[in-house]
Image 1: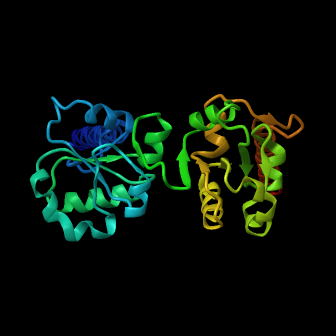
Image 2: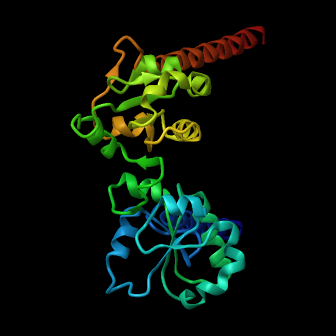
Length: 302
């Protein structure tokens, strides 16, 4: 009788394990599947998918493209035929979107944070087909898709592709300045050819050095895009009129395969990783040796 119960318990445990494993696999599939969000009425989608949707009026005849940035950002650039409702105003202007309650809405912002918040507001108010565009208009521009650009503003956000074209077009941009606003250490590791270094922390105090570029094109870049935006705004505030902020920084430039200066003497990431792994292994071995040597001493005493 005990054996029978034991077998039954074993079967029960085995069944339970299989159920748990199945549930974990299902959850993993949901997380790993592209374009599937935790909430079925909100889908996180790439700019590639968003572009396909926008250009397929047969499948998506009533598609709405919703920009949730500020008025100032929208007036600088935006996706064609986009509707602007800033995130801060969205909850109070939902009635304007009532006709789209059950149709597709692509929501985007600058980089993806505000569009996620806006998407969740729409889902909470029973909008059923929400597509949150990952990466925002930055990723859209970086992918090379078309968009409306106001040619009047003095600061323009550009992709590395556009920056590369400008740098290599001496005829159109004979006095172009490429400005690196990273630290001295970063600059001495790698930088764009012929770039001028003025770290962001020093920029406000060194504007006189850039006086000759007051009315000529300046491409501003950093490591990933954050500091270059701050530097661009400083230049604009000080009456520099043709500022081009390179989205994604030198990281995106390198990933795109464009040429740059590299300090061959600087340790590569591979060497650093190897050293860290080697030191870690030595540390683990030392701990194990110490542990087992103590155990042997205890046994000898016993």
